[in-house]
Image (tube, rainbow, N blue to C red; front, side):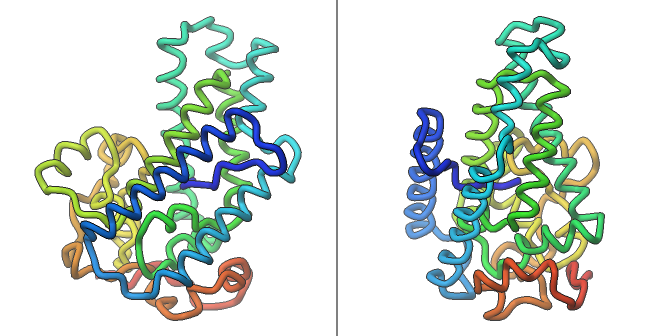
Length: 281
């Protein structure tokens, strides 16, 4: 889920360089956009937040590199070589197979996101993402490494069952990373443009609702890329109760300096403490 820094160290392959370049360019563009047209005034200093959030993203990238075989692209390559999976068995043409694989993977990540909210043990991992007291593109990299490992396992299983081609998986990973940076942006879009755009893409205003402290809002708008699943399954919420400028972000029990510390983020799922999932109302 979200955006993992797309870098496999040491030694960057061609796909890795492309993904890293797109990631850095998107992050830089979103930072400039936020500076010129912010949606909200941040509640906490950026420096500490950015250091911890991006540090988690880098840790997750290193985890994907260190754990052998933890790659959906590698599974896709095996499926292609062995003719394994539904699309490989059907011999679907690329014009059909690639967009279908991207859509199915997106639906799978949406469903995984819902499960991480509803299963208490998984919520403790995912809560690291939601304890960010502000909301900007670096929030998209703020995921606990254990959650990233589970998410990669889910993607690998979907790829294997589907028989997705490596190109389709790379396209999905780039799309997911780029759109996650975009829809976590603290940026202002014209309201008319936002209404039209969110018919096809999750916008920052749409996803920001998901980061509200209000429980009913936290448990809505799960999409990172395609907005259709929330509408289809009844989890779509158009606007926050108190408006985007008035809403409180994060988890109310953790809106303090702890949430800015890298070490606290790593330890948080395993520490005893209040099971906070929004204040309700």
